[in-house]
Image 1 (cartoon, rainbow, N blue to C red):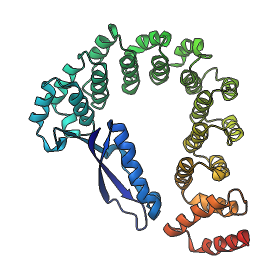
Image 2: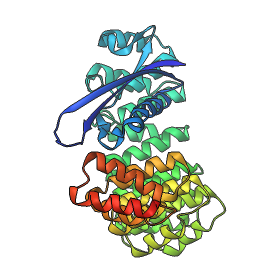
Image 3: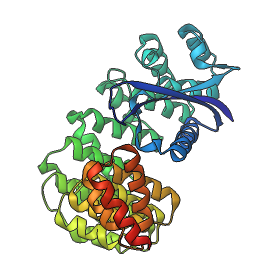
Image 4: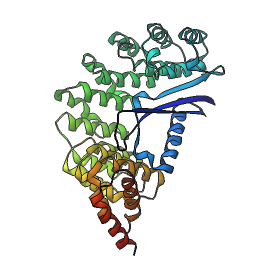
Length: 377
């Protein structure tokens, strides 16, 4: 277990609204930075739940900082030269901690000496260290060049690293590598194929879509969902019936991927399909429904989100409340109406309580109280 310090910067979006930025830090232990970040978010959320502050405090994600402890001191207590010396020592475990932390530190991330050293470590024999290096370098626009990509992909044996590089090509929109990306559509590894489809969608043209058809019935859920999204966004041969097939699968992951893809496809059929699966038995499917409805961000989406207020899973309920509240003033009327439905009443009441504490308009307070009394008595 490693000790971490997680620093969140956030806005308070309660009246009077201002641009003032606040910060809070948590010191905790975890097996890796991802687990530490999740635990810090939970602690941030525990305060929110007890004070209703979750609806007025918004984390500024790009400012989040994660700092590990190295040899009894937090990494931000060391100089840049000391950090370079640690990386020179060849301790793989410490190097992974340090390289992972660098991507959260803008000054280190743009230090030529630090970036040069990380580029050296990309050639290390430890796959996990190499992945950490690539994930950190991808945060620096100048650190990974087209030449580096071609060199790494030519003889790369690790499918995880191939998958990461293919994803970065899409992020950087390096159209010159379209042929290399197409070659990776044929790889045996699911993650490599899925990333290749996403990247083709970002850097390809409508004429490149023909290369996706062999994957339209791929055995992997993420590959198939990415193909459906790509067919839609590239503007040809969109097949809604293929998503319907995925939604009929016994595999919860296949259904969840199909649901997630629907959030990227703007069509009338999408809302109808999402509505059919509101009560899916899988938690991940129901959570993805909320995510997709949030992405679609339409009045129809909000109507379906309100219908989900009978959700029994606490984690999904919290995510649902946050999503509904993100729709702003348009939710008040629908929540007032939802008070009249016994299955939706408690969720609607909780959300209206939060809104009332923040900004429920005076003209609607009486309506809310009247409907509440009418519903409960």
